[in-house]
Amino acid sequence: MTKLSVNINKIATLRNARGGDYPNVVQVAKDAQRFGAEGITIHPRPDERHIRYQDARDLKEVVYTEFNIEGNPIPSFIDLVLDCKPAQVTLVPDAVDAITSNAGWDTITHRSFLKEVIDEFKRNGIRTSIFVDPDKKMIEGALATGTDRIELYTEEFARQFGLGNKEAVQPYAACATLAGELGLGVNAGHDLSLDNIEYFKQNIPNLLEVSIGHALIGESIYLGLENVINMYKRKLS
Ligand SMILES: CC(=O)[C@@H](O)[C@H](O)COP(=O)(O)O
Ligand SMILES: NCC(=O)COP(=O)(O)O
Image 1: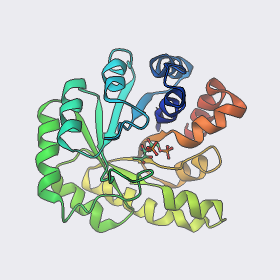
Image 2: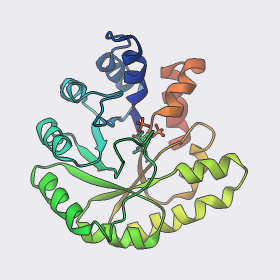
Image 3: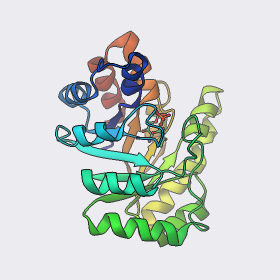
Image 4: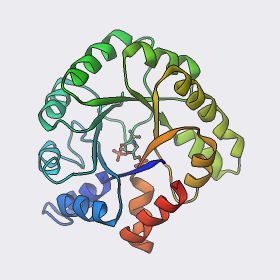
């Protein structure tokens, strides 16, 4: 079974557009779980352009499914995660000024840094995942960091699938197979959508979890959040 973790960054984007507290991210997290989400993902960025650090603290009180906090492990992020103690932390090497996540870790170059950070999270009982491109060398490098899981960065798959190139799933399938052989769990995310999720799921062995936000919230404008969550769950079952 593949778990659906709903990324609610875009709810915070909408809230922040007016400076108030509507839509309320805590209420949306509660509702998403009631509608069937098996996890809630947030990605607090240093400029707090959407999710704020305080949101993470508020959400930890209501997320009874799997709480997943993503981000670049700068000192303030590490402190936040250790304070919130989510079920999972996903490490993403995003630059402060990146519009969105745009690359996976070089797990070879950054091995000792990742290992140090991962050790600290694991000592605190937090499962770790690292965001990686579908490159076998990076999966092998991930093993040496001590991480529990990898998250396959799926933007290129989504782009190619949209162009009709279904073969683009192959490097992801090969990396998921290798990760399984090495004992690493496999998550995936970025630009997954109702259009591409079923094909991705069918082709990726042992896919434990997908985190989906941008498309899922956009689709919910037309189809409603409850309906969309259940559509994803059917495609992932
Ligand atoms: C890690 C990742 O893949 C991202 O998709 C991210 O969580 C989305 O971040 P933004 O919502 O800031 O684009
Ligand atoms: N880890 C990926 C994620 O949380 C959501 O990415 P996207 O669906 O907003 O592209």
